[in-house]
Length: 204
Image (cartoon, rainbow, N blue to C red; front, side):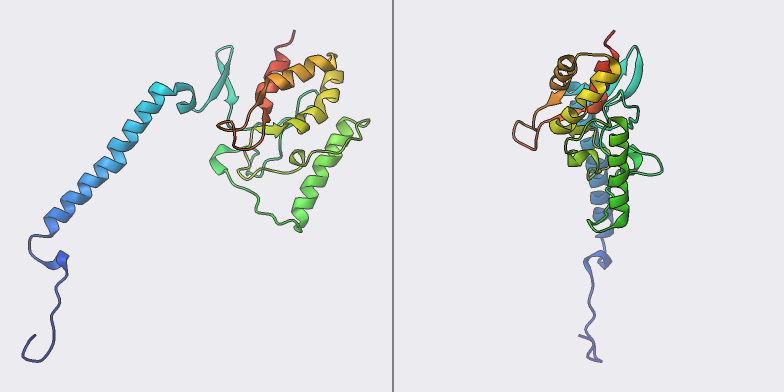
């Protein structure tokens, strides 16, 4: 304490010889966590899971047509339709993954659901079965490539009729493209819409 009665405090950074070790530790941690660790994880992923590490891309006839992880918009009635997308400025925009955050009383949510209901009825006027909720709502990410098995079954008759295919043939394709819960226990079975529609197009 000084003669005037004031106590002078020194922080560790202000003490001589502390700046260099602090900078050295900062640089070392930056290299380890910013370069070495991400590089190691990426290398292991590409070696063990090359398909997933590359984005789970779907390639047909040498051309990339999409990803197993990101939905695509389908509006032609001869295709299965997926969930609505909440991303902007275009649907299923992978760079803008976000939920709509619309509450159940928000008119925009009601309007979007009503618009999809009307479109489904227009595409298949004779189908009076209850419409599965995932066909008229967006997922939390706005990119979900899957629909429920019930949502796929709702559309089987329409797709089969417009393509001139037996209903049982289309149901078999739905079953072949149904994926089980994650790790066998997480969530419900789902149908990958893009893979299902590609399988439809492969039918000669």
